[in-house]
Amino acid sequence: MKRPELICPAGTPAALESTIRAGADAVYLGFRDETNARNFPGLNFSRKELKEGISFAHNNGAKVLVAINTFPKSGEPELWYRAVDDAANLGADAVILADIGLLDYANRVHPNLRLHLSVQAAASNPIAIGYYTDRFGIKRVVLPRVLTVPEIAALSSAVDPVETEVFVFGGLCVMTEGRCALSSYVTGRSPNMNGVCSPASHVRYVETAHGIASRLGDFTINEFSKSEPAGYPTLCKGRFVARGNASYLFEEPTSLNTLSILPDLMNAGVSAFKIEGRQRGRAYVAAVVEAFRAGIDAVIAGHSIPDIDLAHITEGGRQTTGAYEKKWR
Amino acid sequence: MCSKRTPFFDKLLPNVIERLADAGKEVVISSQALIMSANEQKVARDLATLEGVIIEANDITLAALLAGRQFAVGPFVNIYNENTLSVFEDMGASRICLPPELPRERLDEIASRARAELEVQVFGRLPLAISARCYAARAHSLSKDGCLYVCAEHSDGMAVDTLNGKPLLAVNGTQTLSFSMLNLLPEIPHMQKIGISRFRLSPHSVDMVSVAKTFRNAMTGLLGPDAATAQLLELCPGIEFSNGYFYGAPGHKYVEAD
Image (cartoon, rainbow over all chains, first blue to last red; front, side, top):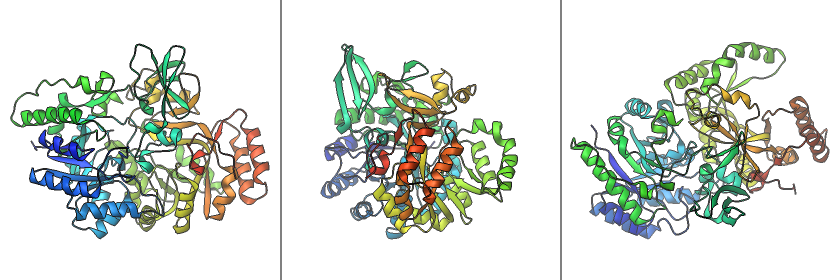
């Protein structure tokens, strides 16, 4: 059994340090602009912070992966080129890219830079991954959250020696990543173009006769009674009416949690486990990293999975193994 | 969209292609957008060997299989800039339908550098997302495996409203579309001016033959934008139009042409 790398989110320099102390093998992060898919206020790294972060990580035996995974604006590729150049020059261990034009640039200009294919590229089969490998020399692919564990096992074996990375915990896109424009349909701002989904700038909570409505742009995403906590209106986790019934049509507010199926994912030949949540607080990230560090180490040592309850930090107190189990579809 | 639908039309396809070709129409076969299973990969490989028709790649998978030949690229492939466009052109993409969320300035930029023929959707519900999960099945408390083909009940997509009754989206099985209908009829002259030469209509249960004639007449200049729009409104009674993406606004909005 391969010992998978544990890849953890670093939204800020402080989170980078605490995450590595909690047992991350690598952290992933982004620059403070539209070049990455967590372009949120107060998050991400300046060039100086990246330099210091890489130094801290390398001194502690951890890697730094820089996500530059939005799709460059036509006519303005320089911001994205500069992100790739700076990541390479500051000694990042890899960059995580989604756009084909940017992969072409990185491969041409920085032939020694290690390239990972972002989940935002949604490469979901060996033919697609083979293209990115042959054409741009990618070394690892982050798999879209659409595949079952047996499908991941078959895929990992088919694309070897290209490594596969899967999400093991955190926020869950129910739409195929990089192929969803729901957010821009409602707010004008999207993951692909702006690095944001259901942005806080477009969120409002409005009092109604029965309680509180959460709104995104011009649309009601959910309603809550006065005694319920009003959740964040992420579009695909909203309550909508179809066929006369109100329901969480796309997905309930929930978090991916694969701790219970960790041995299956490890047996599937996956090289790296990723924890979502660069926008989360340090305590949240540290708790998740410690749980998965303990889980991976236990499975490698031949022990049973530690019984660690993460329900208190999941969205809406709900957990799912998502697309990893076929019944989810 | 969904490989489970293939057996319903697969056998009819050769006849349909022949009939259209006999009528002097060019036939383009569009690939699936999300290709995962071994069977879906096999279908993709078979599609890539077809002769005599143009294949539209809606996933990098098909583009990879078709590289070196002439092929088309559909709106589900992420071509957001001229560098990506250029990689696809070098692979053999000779016509490319751009993603729906691109605003006018980005279309202008891309069109100014394109070697391939460019296409933009101008009518119909907007394709917004695809998923491994089937939301038509889910709305019927079924799973995708045991879906009973309930998506067939909703030929224009299953309407999805907000809790306070405002139409928002439409579900086509694993695909999520806008509820509003895109109408870029008044914007066609601008797009023609920058070199976009192909305009896509996504079918809806209205008189599509007349809709197509209206767009054709707008393209040739036989009808001015105002007259063509008036005709389209008559053909689509009660339908909510949108064009926000073109103007850099939320996609659901309708912005008055300037």
